[in-house]
Image (cartoon, rainbow, N blue to C red; front, side):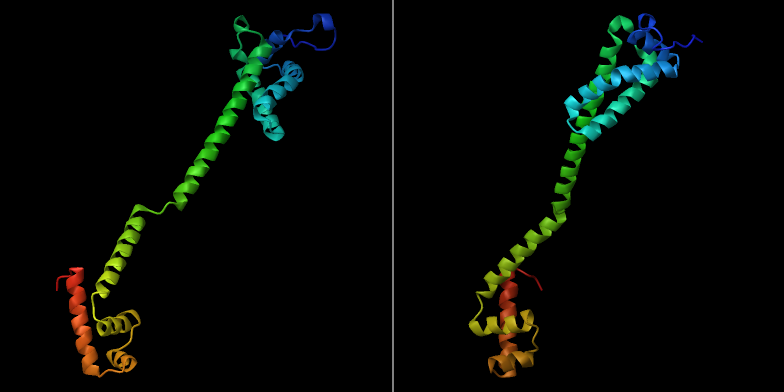
Length: 194
């Protein structure tokens, strides 16, 4: 294992960020503490520029620094500076967070719309019921006045034949005949087969 580097003893001999990341790749916690001190501010700045929310920015910056600790062995100095590598990690993580938040909002919105959208069968039933009511109303208009009154009282108000006769001041036999004739006309109008 490499000898631990003592940071802060002599500025001329202090390792640069690339060397520190190399030491972090070997598991050097003191080197990571130095990397943290150097990059925490710039990472937070990059992340905050994307997220704009302080709490989320701090959370994402912490995630980036943990990622630096875990993925330090992947750093390649021939591809760029350690600072650029770390800031790129920060920017990508911040963009991922924005996309995640937007996707969650879109899912929530879609779920809310689906919750308000009635099932197909429910819509079909409502339409069929409305059409049936309209057809019954149209057929009721084809009855005589006494037939319509008798059917309405008996079937929509739930009155007995005797109560219908009393309400219309007609003999019970007349009400029964009007009801029978009215129901036959309604059946024919509605196209119901016996």
